[in-house]
Image 1 (tube, rainbow, N blue to C red):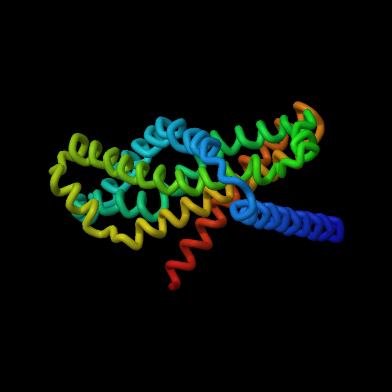
Image 2 (tube, one colour):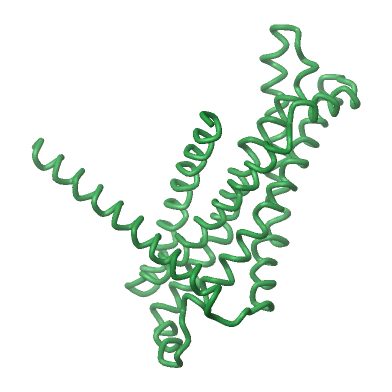
Amino acid sequence: MVTEVLENLGKNGLNFFCYLGSLGILSLKTIASFFNSRFRGREILKQMNEFGNKSFPMVALVSVFIGMILAMQSASALRMVGAQLYVGSLVSLSAVREMSAIFVALVVASRVGAAITAEIGTMQVTEQIDALRSLAVNPVNYLVAPRLLAAVITLPFLTLFSIFISILGGWFVAVYGMKLGSNLYLYHAFKFIYLKDFLISFLKAFIFGFIIVIVSCRQGFETTGGAEGVGKVTTFSVVFSFLLIILANLIITAFFYFL
């Protein structure tokens, strides 16, 4: 019994690191394609529209709710020590340092990442990827590179948008729910956040965008088994993107915390 458990753990661990290795190889191929392939500006703009403009409504909705929740939870804790005026500080610090980058990445992974995997997976099972290769078109250059560039450009902007919408959501609760002065809330909201906090948040967004595209495309290329296979790899793509996003966030946060 114990031997079987250890064997499964070892096998799963080996598969996990092999999978990370395949993601690394695809990442290197994609980065190399930026230097040896034609710049496809129209396709990049199309993908930026998918990642950015079409994600704005969902990001805005999630962000305003996050801000309101943070304000209510912060107020209930700060009320016990008579420090409700610092609600804005807790909302802004939470949004800038953690919440906005993570939730934007999760929204994009579930909306755009799933679509990428399904699209490329469908192309794979219908042999369209093989058709591209037969026409001397590199699938990585053609499919992955524009999406990766679009993701790493748009996610930092989405994160910045999310930060301010979250602060706005907190402002609504603070002003109309707690009867806190608007100027007082905004003063404390921006008092304790610095340029470094924004830059770290943008770095996280950049890395999260990279993870989403690489995982989504890799799963698409590995699709087998027809329509059922497309569904399975799409689910795995979203779940594994979530896992790597949280893991990457932990590593980045720990790095700058101990720096």
